[in-house]
Image 1 (cartoon, helix red, strand yellow):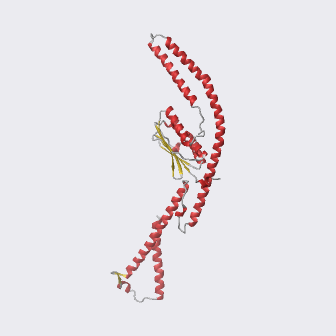
Image 2 (cartoon, one colour; image 1 turned 180 degrees about the vertical axis):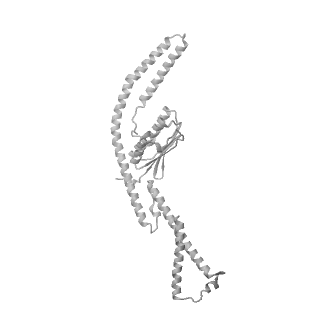
Image 3 (cartoon, one colour; image 1 turned 60 degrees about the vertical axis):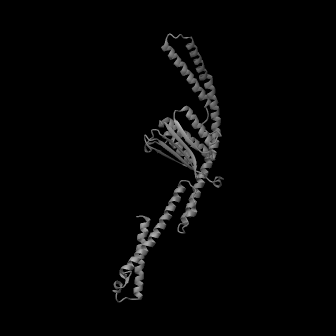
Length: 346
């Protein structure tokens, strides 16, 4: 039974109970000898015996309905407020002004402060961890990148160049008698030449996977631009410039990398869309593709890097939701609350 109906029935019952008690008191003080007057006396052309219960019913229904509607509004307001707190949004507790709900509003304010403090600590720890980890990673990756680039250039790249020169010389000195063999050798030369181009691109794009001092917007756009040049997939994106803490930027960038990597490796998608925007006091990162999708209830923990992305979102006080159906693509959505300037201070 709904709150309004419950209050309605309660109001009617209370009105009849009060009328019976008052009637008993009046009767005890002023006894009635002849009850026929209740049928003989009329009010609005109706006997008083019928009018009085009807008036009691109307009064009970009015007060019960009013009470029920007020209670439902208060419960709906509490529900919306709790949903906002659960979502990480900042809510205005002044909207809950009822005296009866004062104790509840105080508890809700306390819960909100505790959640804000936990989110602030999580983001602060993520920032410190990201800065320290990035320094160590940059040193290791920079050394490894230089070593790989040097070895690839000195060995594989030089050998490809030598093979290209040999095939070019062979094709120039050959006669045109064997057309079929000449075409095959020409194809080999073109393949070597294409491999050289790929090797040059690999040497140019040997880089670490972190932001490297770039803003989140610039890092994401460079990553997606590079994918457009290398991968046959249609990419569309809308990325707003949003000032964020270093740890939050780092985790969002790595979630994007992991998600795009999953799309390229597993989704078999032709199109993908990336959205990074600010909505009120939330950061929204959404990645969608039109790939093969999968069943979430059959997905094993850790598969496709989903567990890693969930952990990264949780570390910065955010939430990650995934919607996917076989044959209908996948949508990944990360929501991270933005703390006010006062809350970000230690």
